[in-house]
Amino acid sequence: MEQQSTLRLMAVAGIGLIVVAIIAVIRLFEFNAALPPEAWQIASEKQAAEYAAALKTARDRWDLQGIAHYELIIERHSSVLDANAEPIACAQDVEVRDEKVAAVIADDCPAQPAFYSPALEGQPTQPTISALFGQIAHDTRRITWSAEGIGCSFVAVNVAYDQDWGYPHRIEYLWQQPPPEFGYPIDARYFLPGTPAPTGKCGGAILVDGPQIVITLNVLP
Figure 1 (cartoon, rainbow, N blue to C red):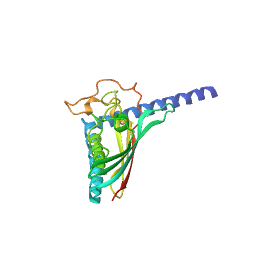
Figure 2: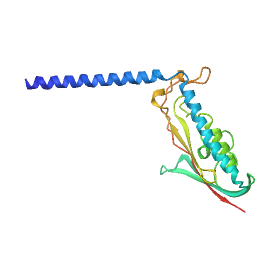
Figure 3: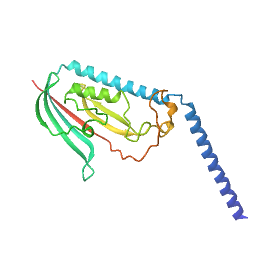
Figure 4: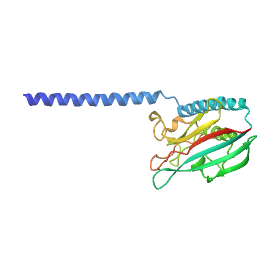
C-alpha cells in the first residue's frame, strides 16, 4: 500500500514536470510570436543610434578642449594568443599635431585586424584621436558577423570615454550571440526583405575576443 502511494506521488510529480515544461514552451512560443517582423533590424538600428549618441557627446566634449598638440600612447591587446593563451600585445607612441602624426616615438604594431578591429578594411588609420573616433563610428554603425555567417555571432563594441576630455580611453571588441528569442542563427523573418539573411547553421568556429585597446593621452605645449 505504501509502495503504491509512493508510485502515485512519483507519477503526479512527473506529470507536474511535464506540464511545467509545456507551459515554458508555450510561453517561449508566445514571446517569439510577439516579436514583429524585421525585429532584429529594428533592434540593430536602435543599438546603432545609442552608439552614435554616445559618440557624438564624447566628440563634442573633445572638440571643446581645443587640444591640438599631444602625445598618444595606444596599447593593443590582440585577439591572437601566445603559447600561454595570453593576448599578443603591441604599442604605439606618437606625437600628434593638428590631428596629424608629427613624430613616431615607437610602433611595433603589425597592420592586422587582430590588433585594430575585426571590422578593419584595408590599412589601419593613423593613430590620432580623430581616427579613433572614426574607427568607432565605422564599427558601430553596422554589424560585423563572425566567419560562421550572418545571424550567428557578432561583434559588440564597448567604448569608455574620458569624462573630462571626451577622447576614447578604452575600446573592447567582444563576440556575442544574439538573444535567444531571435534564434540561433537568427530567424530570417526578423531581417528586412531584400537584405542578406542567415542561410546556414552556427557553431564550429573558435572565436577569441579582442582586440582590447587602451589609450593614454598627454597634452603637449
